[in-house]
Length: 67
Picture 1: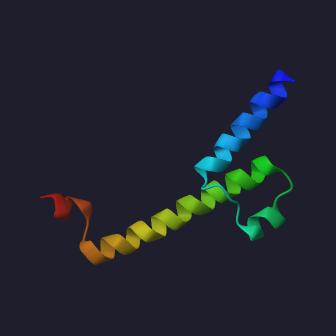
Picture 2: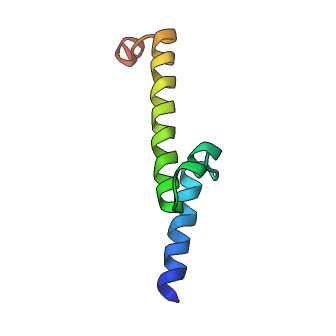
């Protein structure tokens, strides 16, 4: 019982870290909650990278901005 509660707490925390929800397409594509959370985390990283590249286009590279 203790292990189940600990695992549930870990999954709940992992879900919080990915923003509290799973994209419906991801939810349909992966059978387990663990796989869905990992896929959502990867999607979030890819989105963040795209946003960073767009920001860099708009304001320049961080080294140029901080000098």
